[in-house]
Length: 106
Image (cartoon, rainbow, N blue to C red):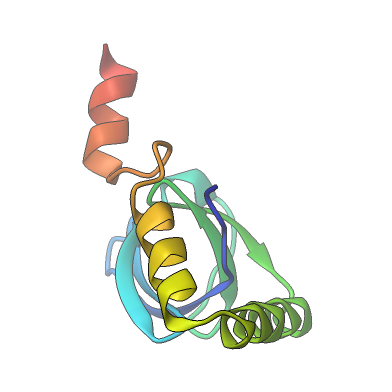
């Protein structure tokens, strides 16, 4: 199962086509091509899917969701946590923005 955990925007590229987000302590780059025309600022919370920022979400809702994810993780033993992380990393819908771009060009 692929989860979309709220991520905080940490940095926005000069050309505003990519950003760096923090997802519960893990930083990654994401494409902003789906957000053209939308206002996005450092500190905003967003949801990602296959490497693209899909939408901006309310900070209060984002923090509540993150707290729920933390509660779920705390209730799991170490083996369950590792399995959940591996399953999410292997999500067939997950891919880099380059993979998505090349797929859409075909």
